[in-house]
Image (tube, rainbow, N blue to C red; front, side):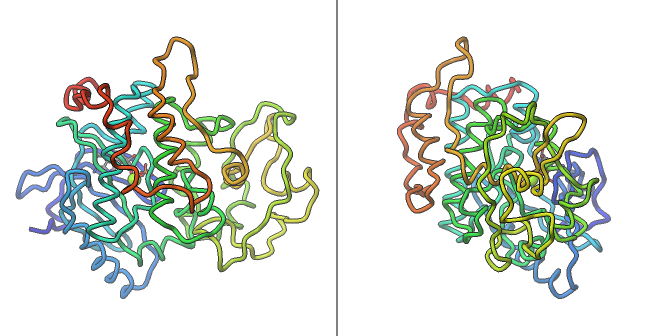
Length: 373
Ligand code: ADP
Ligand code: MG
């Protein structure tokens, strides 16, 4: 039966993202431990009801690669989603605790994510929209499952005017305002694989501080338009860059028109903070790069620009003692991180990829590995 708000007892906080918070709860009547996600939504009651109806699709998902749902309810002004509790947590927390994840284990994770994406798309015509380590969960049976997929069009719309839809895992085409497609999920998977295998986010200019702040709650969650957000010093999320000369020269930033914007990236309302025709120096400054305590800082917009402009990240051996990445893994990552969306493969084309058939990957026992985490 659908859990009722009063039947849930809080056990612990599991984490906070930029879309809300997640609690470990007990459904008292059944004794089932669940994860309760609380999402703050600023929308009319009719829209909220529609969101709830759409979230029902989650309830009908039945795959070993997808976190199952117990149901959702409205708890003004929030929407609560009760889902399967994954006792080993998400892959961001895992790698931040144990360091870079063995490439053969990463192969297993990638295989599960692809199968999850394939299930969502083939059975429900859903694209995930938010593939990243924190939305890939592990349990002590060694199962790897996806959560937080875009089941509700209304929910996506309600969040679209905030910074919530913005993610550092966004594909170049999405940053440039193109329609979201299944291939955008594949890009995010590629970034995720590099992050897990290297034990750090692939855009090396970014410090942990920035990456944490970039996904911290409150970034635009008040529903203010992103330009307001960027111009406000308290809200300015920045990263440290050691020296200015290390910054590559920036071509003029092209501000997409409002109607072609990806959710959350600038609103092109002519706010003087973003200037598309300045020279490199003023453009850089006007884009939110400024001096803080002597170090150059970079805003999330700057990172977005890097993703569009720079060659895609690759799997590279970071030090000589670490286990070599097999060619198959590198090739797979290169397929995912094809910058041209037209040339990028789909999950269906990638699911039987040679990497997953390799002896080393095939013989990984995820249950044993999960126990060691
Ligand atoms: P984000 O995914 O951006 O980190 P969320 O609010 O979606 O933010 O989730 C916060 C954290 O809660 C995640 O990083 C994850 O570690 C944890 N979490 C989410 N869902 C579950 C779940 N079903 N079981 C266990 N932990 C979860
Ligand atoms: Mg999440």
